[in-house]
Amino acid sequence: MENELQKYFLGQDVPVSTEQIDSLFQSARKFSDILMMYQCAIREVRTKFEILNDDLALHNHRNPIEMIKSRVKKPQSIMEKLNRRGLELSVTSVLENLNDVAGIRVVCSFVDDIYKVAEMFTRQDDVSVLQIKDYIKNPKPNGYRSYHMIVEIPVFFADRKQPVKVEVQLRTIAMDFWASLEHGMKYKKDMPEAEEVIAELKSCADIIAATDLRMQAIRDRIHPEL
Image (cartoon, rainbow, N blue to C red; front, side, top):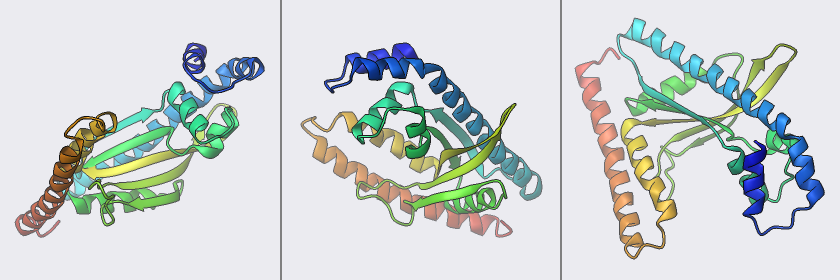
């Protein structure tokens, strides 16, 4: 943790006092503790989705969830985000101001699976929904589609119960594939043909959305009981 903090500040052109760096280094263990806490929260949320998937597979004879991906932001990324937003560089600031330190991505087979799985997940009495952004019904201008939730769940440790925020994204396989490709444009916006590529990606996003709905309609004809 200390090495990541040191690398971050040495590469910045922002005024940071020696006392502030010393204070952050003294807090390194606390940062390690909260990163462990976020990892535990991810395990809790991941297990909830895995149980839902197993239960639906048993009773509906199919798995609506194709895969589950997860990540905890790296310390340097956390510091950079706090700094960009002009927030205090502290453990308390991370807990209070950042919602996406812990992230879970749930990839579903069909669009309606996203809403069904999300509804079953949020119905659980230890899951508190803090925010929902539906980029499926309301896509971003670039064509991005996904269903986002910020949830808070309790994580039980040896000496305490800690509420932890987790960002949950639900999307179809096609949406996930598109988003992975589009993510690369974040670092390629100065390429000569950037505008052309962005337009083509937007067109692909629209085609993917239409295809997702057509595939769902076909499934409903084959398996109306679902």
